[in-house]
Structure formats: C-alpha cells, structure tokens
Image (cartoon, rainbow, N blue to C red):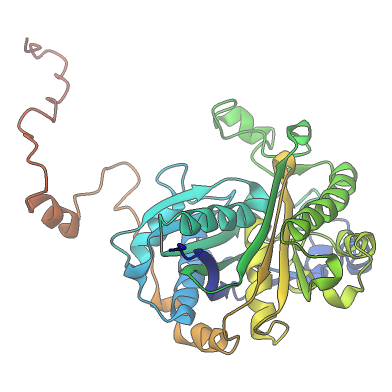
Length: 398
C-alpha cells in the first residue's frame, strides 16, 4: 500500500501595519532628500512607523491571530511557531515565545529565525520541512520588523528605505496536491558586511562608545547590495521554479521582497516577464525586511490577485547575502482573508511586559499551577535550586 504524500498548504494569512504614516515629504523636513529623488530611485512614497507602545512581538501577534482566524483553527492547534526578524524585542527570550503567549497557544514549540530580509522565506521552508516530515500539522510562520528604531535619520541612504509591520501565514498538512512545489535557499557570506548592524552582539557589546559612534544603526553599501540582490533574486526564483518542474511563464504571480522598484523591474526583465506578474506594494510600506513578503502575500490574496489553482512564487534577498524562493500552488479560498482581518483588531491582542527593568518577575499563576501538577516523570527537586550566594561578612557554608 502506497503511503500518501504529505504536502504543506497555506490555509491562513494575515498582516498588520501600524497606523502612523511617514511620507517622503515628512523626510524632506528631516534629512537632505526629496520626494522625487526617493520615488525615482526606490519607488517608495511612504512607510509605516510603529507607535511607542508597539513592538515587534505585538505587531506579530496581531498578524498571527488574523492568519489563525483566516485558517479557521484555534491558536492551540498550532504545533510550531517560527518568527523571522532582525529586530527582536529582546536577545532573549525569543520574540516567538512572546507571541506564543500573546495568542493563547499552550503547546507549540517557538523560535526565531535570523536571515534578515530572507527570514520569512527561510522560515516558510523550515515549516514545510516540519510538515512534510510529519513533525507538525499546523505551523505559524511570521515575519515581523520594527526597523524604524534602528535607523540613523541623518543618513539619507538608509532612513528613506525602511518601515515597520508584520505578516503571517498558517501552513497546514494535507494529502491533497498543491502547496509548496519547489524551494531554493542560498547564502553568500562574502557579502556579510554589505548590510549590517556593527554593534550590539558578542563581537561589540553595547557601550557608551558604540552608541556614540552610531554603531547600533543599520549600515548598507547600497550600490553593491542592489547589484547582487538583482542577480540573486532572479536566479533563486528560477531555481525554485525549476525544482517545481515549471517555467517562469507558468507562474501567475511573483511576490518579491519589497526593497526597491528598480530591483523588481530588473528581475522581471531577467525572467522575461511583464511587470504585471510582479506584485508591488513597496510604495506604501517601504522595505519591511522579513515582514515584506508576508505583508505583500496577504495583501495580494485579499485584493483578488491570487485565486485557487494559481502558481505563485515568493522570493527574497537579505543581509548575509541570503536569498530564498518558494514556488507554491495556491489552494485556499482567497475570500477568507478579509474576514480574518476583520475578526482581529490590534487591541484584541497584547504581549505581557516585565514587571520592571531590574527585577525578575514573580512566577505567573498559570506557570505555578503547571509546576504543581504531577508530571509523567517523578524528578526529585529538593536539591535542584542552589543556595543564594553568601553575603559579604557571612560565613560560606561548606
């Protein structure tokens, strides 16, 4: 008897963009630039800026709940949460862990994925592997970024490009044909320092000196990055299409990373396709890094650009010179997305904050209750927690 082939289908999708808009005209008053210069070179007209109370996790949670409602499942049916970001709320815990609690999931594994602007595509590929291997039935894949807090607004080469937002999809197991057809992922570390954040990690921990030197802002070699991105987006997309047994002409819609209109136009030309096969919304959001592809995907579906049976390609390029593409056969009813968006408002989802900066939170009652319950393995805990360090002047016990 032949074992059915397990496939991974998009069953839910959602997006969230902050309400505050930063236009090119606004930037003209902040840095030496102009609306005409920005539009002609990038295609960007405006971008969104997160409010003071918003974080990467809070935006991700809203997009996630919209995707879950669109999928028609409950949050606790999610087996794995993958959150792609280069702007996590904290270095630890993972932003995915915060989202898990915010959406009310109690059983999923959760982790962040770090591949910069390619992060969502990398996470999508990981989710598909989990599903097709039988390790998960429903996976929540998120791309979320709060880039405007990492920009130098005296550097016109970077501050004009980026914006904030989040997008998410639910991938679900099926024995029906369709879903992800072909995947290609690449990394070219020779370009590691073409787009980077110099300080904040183990190589250069935060200090007064790193702050004074502006090393916590995004830096980018624009010309070289764009040149490499243009070539790599095209070749990565083509490889994913060929792995699916298709040709570029078979693809109904490309959803590329929304970095620069010139790059997208060059990719279309390289694949010998008209621009109407390329979905573009960077004029409204700018470059939202890992959130770019899922925001564009959700918007394309909700605007009627995708229908059941369509073949689409998501493709992205990012820092570390990562790139990734997935060829997908769409199987979900596009009409569900608008209802999913309407079902979840930003105020419906909240991320728990620490009690204060310099203390450890008291254990939440839900966690205390879990710890009081007997487990499947009886582990003696009497000697697990060590004594507190002895205070100065106190005798240290042997």
